[in-house]
Length: 170
Image (cartoon, rainbow, N blue to C red; front, top):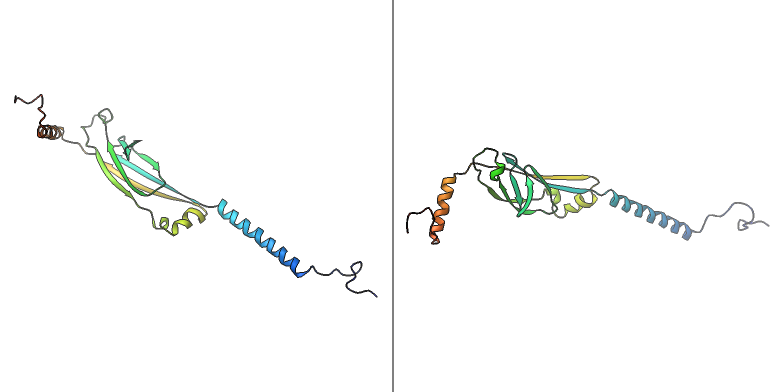
């Protein structure tokens, strides 16, 4: 008598239920691992840039006391916050212009809405492309009155008891 339990002949029986569950779990784990790997490999980034332009161009730019070069300047940055920016045009750089007054400005770099917690996780890690954030500052250098500046220095020196060699007083 031949029964379906006879493994030598006839149709094969399906694998046990426990074996099918393990197989499905392995496939699910492999799919999950592949999906996580794909997300991490394709994760985006945010490119932040501080652009400083001056009028006239060619002025020296210092950011937080560090020379950043001559304008226009493009500086990548990682963190938002305040920056101390000093823009000045030196005597040998002024190209026939009158002396230009330096400008110091405290600039606050604020993040856009998608760079604020908790959305920053999505834009930094999960977003599939590259996001670009550009902060632009424009400085207009104006001529300074050297006579008034010289007089201010003399008055300041006199206030501290320093006699100027140009003074006629003893």
